[in-house]
Image (tube, rainbow, N blue to C red; front, top):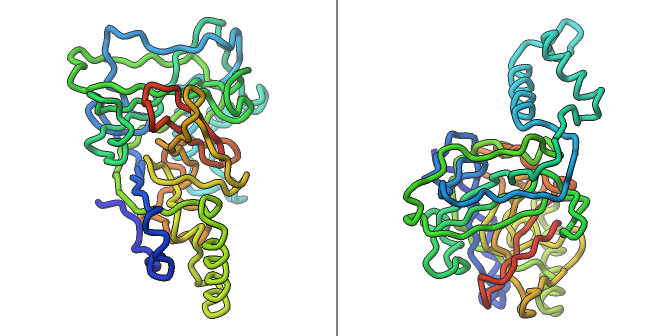
Length: 336
């Protein structure tokens, strides 16, 4: 099945040809439940990781409580199975006694029934993207590489990390897939995670390249004023059916490589490289949803909300920015 975006309501460069130089392509990833292999692009799938290369860990958390990843998966399976059963006579979900006991344990322990012994925690494999599948990675790939692997810490409490109280610390690894001749057979996994929604569900990807235009705050003030007036006129003529620049015509929601990024919760925050001061570009967007409002014109034809199991911040977007001057410079993460 093809997974793709509906046709755009209109070409915004017709009323505003000044937007043409601002156009960028982005690749919507469209993660969907599946059984990806290490040779495929995926969210939550196995990584093509060299057996002789140390798996990255985090040693900042000590003895902590949380959720075992297997418990997370079991809980999700229970919820899926219960949703498929007829409800009880009084309209409640039909849990078995064993399932109810497990849910009661989660409640009793405030969602943290499992303990970690204090050693380093292996990072969670979040995603891997082959450049052959995701064309908008190509401008960012260091020379000689064709595979991006994304891992994150299973806890968000990092004293010096960005958004220490909202999102996990994230690491990016670029490599040449052909160099991995002896891949790791079984990926390490942390004994506990801080939140259920940091554990990704295995998803295959259905990449789709789209054209985007910037968040309005990037544009000249005069152009923004004209766009606002144009939107007001459309609303006066079409009411709630009128497409808007921000949510319908410029920025695609969902997991995405490249393109432009939204700043709808904070207004524009320009991100600069700590190493050289160059303004950075968004490489990857990790999104909670594939649509940005109930009547979103970007909604994929086959929308499956929450397919990845991932939630970032307060149901927001978590973006990795990289330096266009030197891909070796450290990336930066920003939450929206």
